[in-house]
Image (cartoon, rainbow, N blue to C red; front, side, top):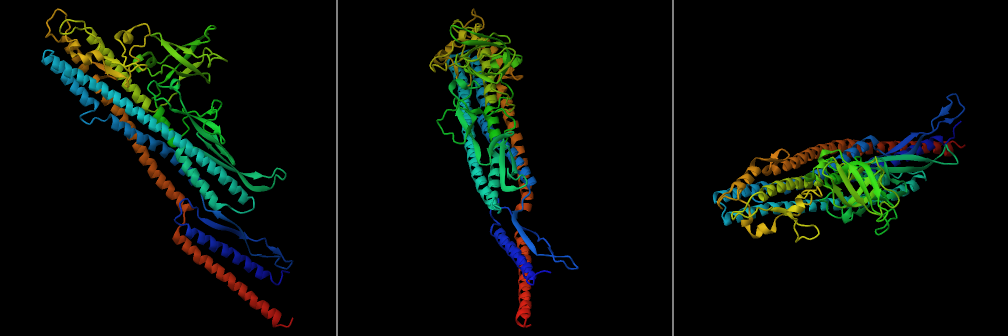
Length: 618
């Protein structure tokens, strides 16, 4: 038989449940405008029935208030974060593509097409004026404006690459900060929940950090309950929380995390000829790593990994994007010189573009990867066919030399068209244009019958006042051709700038000074001969600007798409986890009535007990 006061206990349990529900509703209403707050609700269930050994067997024992839980759907969290990863990537692409497009865009005065048209007009004036000194000087000046244009574009794109490089470091620092905050929250959450409570607000803070992290890099989150080793059937209340990024690379495990450390490349570590010095490689480091510590033994974070995702992926695409053009081939011979300690490695290439020096992007010195090992090279030679020979440093070959039959590469395959791709396109045009112009000019004669000479060259990287001679650009001994000429050092020869009469106007030395057939040949080349991607010299900008415009258009469209999805998925998620004030108002009335009814029940039972105890004379 149940206790006389059994009903009072039941009513008290209902009162406690209603009170918890009212307090939770108050908390929801107070946080209705709090970002990332998850609506909470009281979880309750009927108490275990009491066996009373009567004809009806058992009696209900009231209600148990189990916990106050967050109302949140993990499915929507995953969808939201996946979309944030995609949005972060295309947002960065779109932003920097728009900047590149502005650099290449022709404003009608200083753009490439305008300058090239002006140069063609000046060349026509040389023919019309029968090669006067004034017309020649005007042409040389307009040609110098073309070289200045490419010098400026080179500096602008390098500055853009540097800006992207700094953004990459900021993203890595943000990832490290978020990882540290999550591990701290994990510790607080477990301390609370091991005592039987739910750390709802702390879990909200952690989820907000995960949302931010997902926009920077692709993430995968797993949370598992921790079981007591001594009692396998007992849960401790704690959980193991793991966050993997960039394709299952572990960032943190509950209370410990790893850092992403940015290490600047030295001048001899570039992977593209026109890269700025100091681009950051990324490495994994323990959480106690400090700036200045030895990084030589740290694991590398693979920048070519296609699963990085987020803003970091978008930045890497723009900084490293080479449109899949990079040096790679098969090692066919490795020879170590026992006297000098240096090793020469011979590599055969199969990509026909790697057999064209106008497209070459190899830095003069850099790093080469063979069979997952990195070697440093100080120089390379090209045989004019399909074979390159690299000279490796003693330090990098101290323990092993590159094995034959294995793939060797300088740089990696980045499918996107980023800064290295635009640099390579400019360099290719410059080399083809310079080679053909110099060929025409050196075959002609000046108006006073002197031998013609080359007019386009480059300044030396070692000495900016020194310029490459024509034999250095055309000699067959190194087979590199105009490889040393880039958008950054492209110039009109010093002699021609000082004396425009050195322009080779005549094709026949026996003709008079007014003969200008060599200028006609030059004009014919500029206006009719295809030298770059099936187009004439003056159509360079059309080709490159089309690439930039297409990339910008694609990234902008994707950004708009993922932004719309962010809003849609965000609304779906808020429909579950967000606080609806009307809904809470309705719940408030409901729980108020429940509380009132339980209070009346206690009041009724109190009267019954009073009559039973004080008025019956028991």
